Image (cartoon, rainbow, N blue to C red; front, side, top):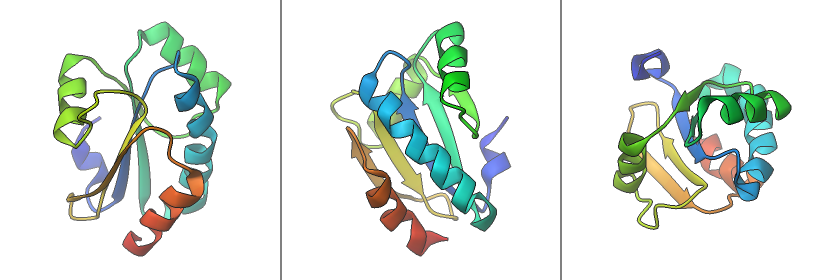
Length: 122
């Protein structure tokens, strides 16, 4: 899986961890947005900072319907470069169809707020 798979799409990178209750609370909203807006060009991508087994179990439990990548040190550095100066979770970054970072948010992000930010880009 490469970033070129999402070329021309509005991409949401969601950095999360299975052990984090705020992350788990956000994911059902991300699943809904992917289901509702995927055909219009939205692509959610989860980057989990977990070991494979807990990530897989949580993904199944939450019925995640978008790609998940296992992250490590380089993904933590990526999140920091995208604006996560606190280096905490959850962290969300939104890219327009040209691949430009247009929005980032550290902490819990309401589904309604993310929807508001995404819609003008679709």
